[in-house]
Length: 193
Image 1 (cartoon, rainbow, N blue to C red):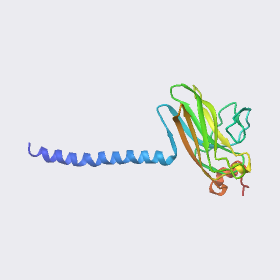
Image 2: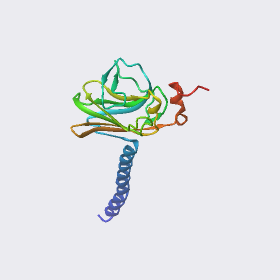
Image 3: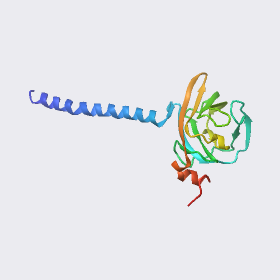
Image 4: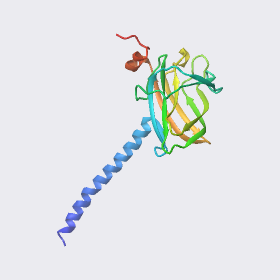
């Protein structure tokens, strides 16, 4: 029996670092998720952030809590050309969040709030509108740079809440065009060399 105890101690000595290493990896993943800038319940939603070149809208609906006073509608959810949260500040760039409800549930009366650096002309730093998420199809909430005052560099955050409960929060960093030239030039924001 004596020979087995040292083996057991060695086994414990080997297992403890593995457990600690796994715990550290889990903590690192949690930190990465926090640094990544998106908060949501992955059991309820799939969530993807990205950037795309502006696509024509098929209409609009009034949204008095926005600078434009309306939100644009699409026939189909645009595909993200870049899966990134870094957005160059150039006209014609669109960026946002695609969500898919895992259970197909429809979330109505969702308040979508967009916070961003203050616009130089209007001073606006928050915009909001009411929308719906979920169902059996992918939904998108996106923003397109249409006017020069909207090209405000810094942190932009989409936050979706329902009955004062967070559905998701997704952060983007809007940067000068030279900081993301491959995206800026693809959408016409920088001359091609």
